[in-house]
Image (cartoon, rainbow, N blue to C red):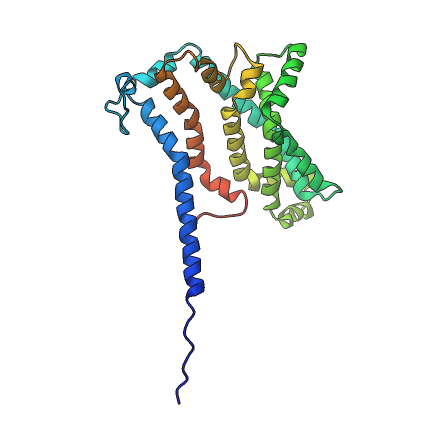
Length: 282
């Protein structure tokens, strides 16, 4: 006697495959939407000045040259602005970690009333338009004598980066088991020593990725730096101030110089960024 098995319903499997294909197509389209402008700017930045003047412009430039980038580097104010951007980025990372990492550790380890509301309140600084923050800060900086300095831009960028630093740090410390910290206290460490010797070293890769994220945020910020500086501009603010009078080669080279750190950040720190939230790339 044989038993006839019912037919296999393959409809759920087909629906799952269709959804997977749709997700992959959407990811490819979004990636192309973001990648194509970067590629075009990069090609224009390494094109010869004669190729930039061609009309209609071909997709692949007819001539490649380093003169466009060289003209941008040799332009007045580019090197000082580059140095200001690097200093502001480093100072912003240091201040954000000194304040944000302990605050993130407290959020991860302590339970208190209004904890969720406190986290939402921190995000209000990012919800406000940058002009709402930069104009009052510019007035305060003028009154205190720190207007148009690297220090003033650092304070502004730290204000913008602090909510992200605190919340990312909190997610990093949550992934560190409390059992390890408690074991260190059993063996004689105080709460501070256990955090310094055990928790922070284990969270160091995530904190490093958070620091790079903060640096890129500071590097790309342009409007606030343009409002509170005149003679000591960062590189994005310098490029923005020069767009109206700069030649076409300067604009393309400036755009490429601004997106290059973000690209380096993505390729170098991709694994650490994903690992921050407990996911491992294989």
